[in-house]
Image (cartoon, rainbow, N blue to C red):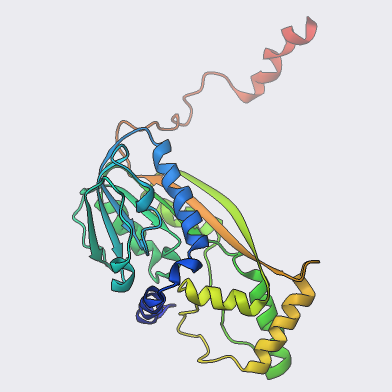
Length: 299
């Protein structure tokens, strides 16, 4: 499946990285990165080799320390982002230009992979997940978050309504995002075990839809699908902003934008991991449960 123009996305990243005031657009990715790093500290072990995929400005790695990881490799397709990437203060760190679809890591060489809000631009997500699983050491962990299917549903709907009215049809202006059930299935198919998925929504209020679209560009989250339209007519943009305000506008005049974030953790199998009991290993049948409660009822 080839949905996204990966070279265009790298250009978007490099352009965003070149903005001297670019960090003002990092509020969403900074928050997601901080939350993901916090989950690393919930795992009571020290990881020898950690890899941050799609690191951007180091949204996850900058929050780690030498109690959690011994060494860190920060990776991104964008040389511009890597040049501004923030490492942890007390952890030996290497920066690498890496395409998430073609990982350079040896089999069984990494203790933990971290990825925050970057894998939604990968074309072959099953292949990337399998490469990560292969590169992990046994009992290694993959911890990450991606944008989910409800992300920017307000903007998507407003653009579709406005373009249909003005131009008789609509283009793909918002990239497709993964659904929770699909994400879990892909991780399982890649060989991960002890999977946990969480779904959360962050709602950010903007003065207008135009401010939202400007911020998306500043985040390097503008559309990179092959089917994207080369431009959006100004009258359609004005109409979309009006529709957005009418359908979703708040009393204070702002408009909300929903960012649906799916967080996950998966482990590479190891004999020491807990496993579900084998089928038929129980010594009490469900049909006997009623009789087990009879003495309690009589008392």
